[in-house]
Image (cartoon, rainbow, N blue to C red; front, side, top):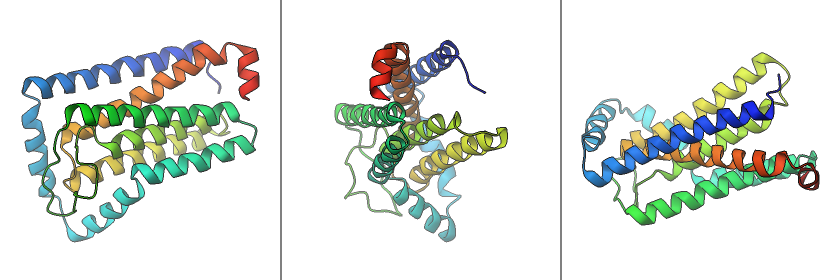
Length: 223
């Protein structure tokens, strides 16, 4: 089942508006010291009680596999695969989405400069000093959203499409939770990272759909 371009534009516009609104609400709450702040402490207390040695071992591995460098490397490999299959447009869309998410993430981290929570499990001294928003959450959301979007139309069966979407959501959610569980981020860092990732993808898809997809000569040159 293929969606017409106008339907995709409406869908991604909704994602863009909702994720942007969520990100603005979180930033406003952080700046004003509103009731959003206690959410960090409340959820941290709940997460502490779920920690076990076995689960900690698994989530340390998850957070290492899901770090921005690993996912950026995976993006390069997927883009190369798409190019080899003649899908240069999809490869460019994937790479640009990741670039926009990383640039936006870097700007926000250096703008707000919120320190990380103290972690009893992992050493955060070697990572980025700033906590907000979560780099893992931002990049993982962008990567797995784009992964599902890039291969959804090429997956033939409904079962295959369902597996693709659910596994992408599960992988992104697991990486995000690992950051919260290990004490590397506050809850609002994770939520802001997810919103920023969705915002980056929806913005890029809208940009490509409006300025490239509908212009056949440019679309054909890209692939």
